[in-house]
Length: 207
Image (cartoon, rainbow, N blue to C red):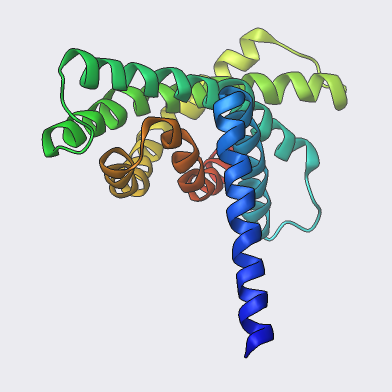
């Protein structure tokens, strides 16, 4: 009994100490920490997607494409838009984060202003990164016209369905996020939810 309790206490202590380190990293280097979090979760999401697809071989370049898009585009963009959301709703409208009106306003901004732009930019940036990596590592010719054409076709075929999936996956947890999480933890919390979302994006972007 005593050894089991000690092991549990030790395990809890490790979790608490690692969480404290993560919170210090968020304070000291917020963007870098959030980008690292996004990279790990994007890689995990694509690994799960490849398993769900029943891939017979591991596609490293595809995984790195998704990681690059999350690190270079999605996470910095979300950091900026979460800050803009808080400024618009909290500072200008003066709606508290814990209030019903404040939570609703933040959610509306996030899902009906921010999310459509993020998803649009995701398809554009993923297409660009995929074309550049194919040119750099697979010797495929890079053509701007072909890139634009493929992105337009992808948007026509996938954008509406992806937005519907986005609202199904994101609205419930974002209610929790804006109601309960302090601003510094909103992007990390969203990144955790994004583990599921990254699986969806990986499946959609690569089919």
